[in-house]
Image (cartoon, rainbow, N blue to C red; front, side):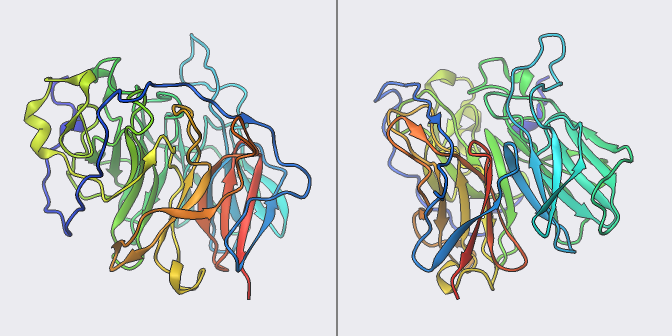
Length: 402
């Protein structure tokens, strides 16, 4: 097991300078706390809050734990519905109590496109095949334009380790522009490798494969829980939003946004934000310290930054063009809440040009309760932004006032 793929060395040069790491406190400078929000749901007539010049409306209220989106060429919107649930001891890959479906929305009406899946998350269409990331692999289904239900069985493109630490069951999928390579996110099976590094095979990585599942390999590694995955429109580079580790204190370790290149290693579980060594893995891999890539931008510790979408040219106006929108699900391991918002990061020349700022807020009711929690974000062809609120069982739509 020593030839674990997560240790892949850097094979390509970094194309642009990376910023200096943020000034971080020492580990355990503050206690590690458990502070879980109580979800109370949305009162009648209440919505999240967007900046002046934008309007927030419900896109769907008949959803159950919506997680991720994909818009089909004919305008239909796909929504994956799945949740984290307890698993039977005798069946570690079968999630119970989760809706486990992909729904299709057309003209305000919901159709169940796929059902009986094993915790579906990311979706991508290539030709006449719809690819769906489920917790134990990637499946592809035959798709016909205009179909509102798929009854044919899937092809299993590849199998992957199922489940994972906390919410690390999610498997996002994304094709390159030519549809030649499929990228898949797989989160770690533990917080910081406490179950043994041998148990992290193919985990904490972004994987790359051919559309038929062949040539499966690690593309970028040491990414504790990469979820959001998107191509930045101006630069054409692949970016990911990553959830970092828990239990080192309120301000450690920041989640981050990173442009990933083939062969890069981001440190998990031994290091974080460059050469900062995790005290729980102290002295284990000094040979890796010089190989760790510093992330492009810190997104705040324990924010649970999941969703990632870049604003298209005809989206929200000049300020937001090309910038990143990040669904921050919100903290549980911090003394006061952080996240619980959609953050915006301005971009210039294909890289971050400022710190994360509020875009969609109002999810927090008080210091103990929240109305909902944002996850996936996606821009539709009409320029509006969809936000999946898995705790509030809503899909929100944000439009720019004309």
